[in-house]
Image 1 (tube, one colour):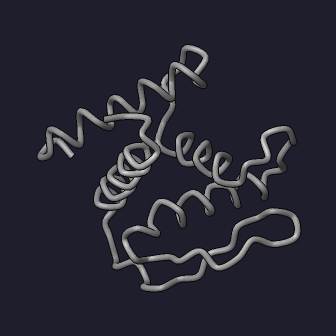
Image 2: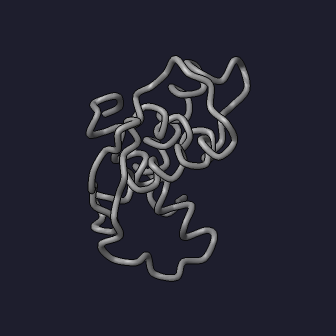
Image 3: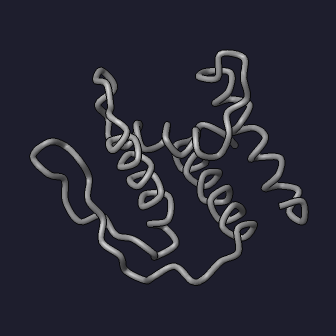
Amino acid sequence: MSRDPLLKERWEAVTAMITERFGEGAPLDLDAIIYLIGLQEFGQFDRRFKKDDKVNLMHIAICRLLEPYGYYRFDFEDEDGWPHYEVVTPLPPLKAGEQTVLMKEAIVQYFLEKEVIE
């Protein structure tokens, strides 16, 4: 990520903004940001989630974040409001660092689309 100074700058803006709003003084990591995006996409903020639900929220976020890259496509929303996605193209094998960069790029793009950052 250090090879792309604009991505680095935007990622820092995202993490600073999210940490200020939700971090209670502690910086939020990539997984926490993915969880919050899943919660945003699900849209039901006033309920408690079990561990399995939290994993599902992260899955929703990953699908939504990678949808513009052509890996997933929104399929339907079930009767409980959970969005479901279908795999369009399987993700290529990526090393851990490559996965992290892809997710950071996708998160930055998400917040650019939502006009939360510039």
